[in-house]
Image 1 (cartoon, rainbow, N blue to C red):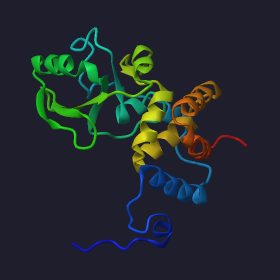
Image 2: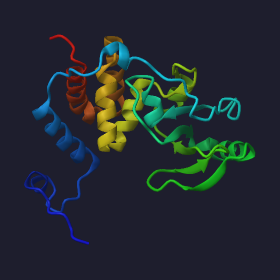
Image 3: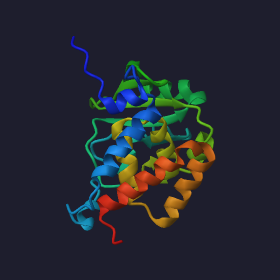
Length: 224
């Protein structure tokens, strides 16, 4: 297999091409900031619409009395225009690992394998939907699980400040796009909460957060 050539801009930061998540995020943000233009696509009324969650398993009865929240792609629909995603990701505290696995398997969810890069498991629902069970131990997790938001269908969703923190830690290109769009659609009050959470738990990311707020608001085409 031919190894890709390391571009000069990346070689300056990481001569071997091995970027840390924060370095990768910084490069993506710099590229986006150079190209940013106020958006002019679909109307805001259209982008605020949400479809019902008929495609996703309803775990509320199965996981009754267990603290859990929806995260990642399906969770973002509570805070921004919807995007396509193939699986349902849920987050629980690592201490609840066994009880959650037991309940899902008792409900005929098939355990497929462990997640590759983070603690957790991939399961398949009786209807063939992939469910990723993420086991967390973040410093903010207890508060986040005790205070979930609700999406338009009433499902428990990780609150925006914690979802931003979780995606900042992952730093994939899709995570950066999600953060930018979510904070671009956020109210001033919600932005204040996001800034406070990042300042408290990940202050080194505050500057990148401001860049993503700027990019998101430009995409939304807010008046200057």
